[in-house]
Length: 234
Ligand code: ADP
Ligand code: MG
Image 1 (cartoon, helix red, strand yellow):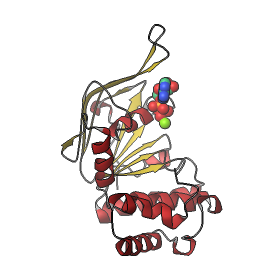
Image 2: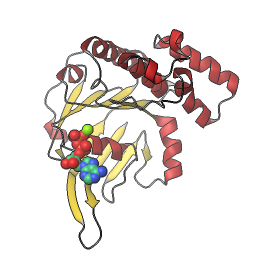
Image 3: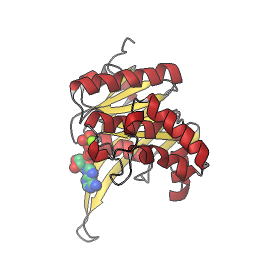
Image 4: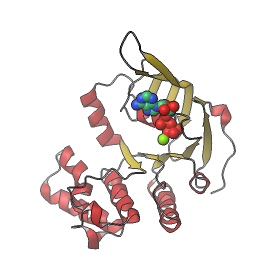
């Protein structure tokens, strides 16, 4: 599902003469099979979010090679990336990244609008998805009128609405209390087991890592398949 080979990345800040180069990732190799839940763990600042941003095309590297679901994505143009993301990737973030001026319904519907789905189909699918995450009573609420757990469910509904085979999650439980965290983790397991969705989850939380089939550690920008720690029981 994901194949990253020899990927390095450095941020460049400042003007040309005084340019500061901050190396963040070094020759990263990562392979995620279809149907896996893989957790990437590592200290703050170790390069986890940068790796996820590279895998999702929000930042680009001159080096290395990224293949997602059989498609070589490393050299895609911005517009092709936008298309590819809609079709193949769902995202869950610590900060939910909902659009505050849109209702729960409109946030979940948005990917269907971007894809050009007809209004009737959008309505059917959006209502079904809101029901699935237990938010059908809250469809007219704005993000600011929802609890953290409810906002995270809206963001998951949005991530799922186009049936992506792969979901990328950056600290998905970082803003949740322990009850909402447990609920989210159970839902991720269900989506993996029943719907076959592959997950790549960044976390420094051991509860989250405990649902993964495999944990991979990133240390100061170094990550190797060999650094796999242990196989987790389902
Ligand atoms: P993590 O998600 O593991 O906490 P990040 O990938 O966010 O780590 O950051 C890795 C390193 O890259 C850190 O040293 C951070 O300061 C640096 N970094 C992240 N984003 C930028 C940026 N936009 N510009 C410059 N440096 C950055
Ligand atoms: Mg991060």
